[in-house]
Length: 437
Ligand code: NAD
Image (tube, rainbow, N blue to C red; front, side):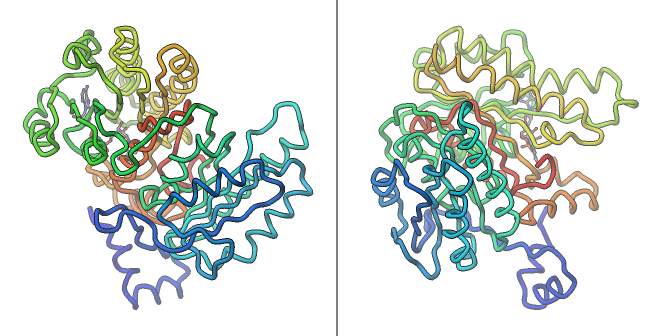
């Protein structure tokens, strides 16, 4: 369903009216296209405090398509390295660095603040580094004009490269107000134009909607995609597989032996990327919700994810250097009227990801992360009543809904072996939704 308000405010009278009436003024987001795959312009690299990463970071930022600058009157992006801030007086330098430039950041531009891991034993360092979180989340709400703000907590510039490339590109258009922690895993070598080249990806629920977009972006980035959906969606599934040069796997993920059937379909080469995207809703307030609306939602959205992941790890189908990306939802963080079942299932995904990630990485060399979409323009949200739909679209810092491709781009970043330092994270793709923030 088209966002008519976004189109209207893109016209001169629409802009005038929205300004006069104090209504939201969304900017059309700039997304990846083959003709225009990068942000263009200057990347302003600023430092607050004494950074331990200066030279390494400069080298990595030089490798982006942006032109590195230490001064710029109209930067496409600003990276503020605040990793060296270890006490609260140091925060004055964050203000001093960004206050003069924030107004000049280009439309659809990026502000990325780099922080250090929060120390569990130094409360002065912890106060200063945690302060950056409130700072970035507030800045994301202030920036407007399609601009985003993100905090990346890193231990080494090298391990952060794939994340910085993602954030400093149009691929992250609908990701704002997030805090991303990067561990110190060895960064895998990467062909940045086709980061998933030679890898096999399984995407569940891929006959349509977000899953179809995920399969498309993973294939664009070089992966062979195995697309899975219920047997009744086989026609659409085969069309998706044919279009992407992939393989269709009609299968209900709630089947007891679904994991084993996935494993045998993927033998002998195994699987590198597992995307748990299939999901259903059966909304009703708890007081009116019979068990036959509760159980299927928990079964499809959570129990099947657990069962099939366990089976694929146990059978050794998931190759070392691989990744699992599961789909949560901001409903699992904020809760939602009529969605006790759905929100429980999506919160369960977050629990699963956080608990499984360290062990899966140590034992199998596999990362486990989640994407948590906000309001995404799909058939699912087109069916939402008009007033609630409009509220969902506007109640975020970018004042618009996301597109399936936004979730897909985030999934592709998490799935790349170069993102091995990102593990156990839940990344919201929600335009910094006010819900659950
Ligand atoms: P959708 O309904 O368009 O697509 C879901 C797909 O999953 C369908 O093709 C369906 O056939 C498949 N599926 C359902 N049950 C299955 C089963 N048992 N086995 C195999 N496949 C099955 O939904 P969507 O909007 O594309 O959502 C995709 C995911 O994103 C879901 O997990 C959803 O909960 C989540 N999500 C969506 C939004 C949104 O705004 N659309 C927001 C937050 C989270």
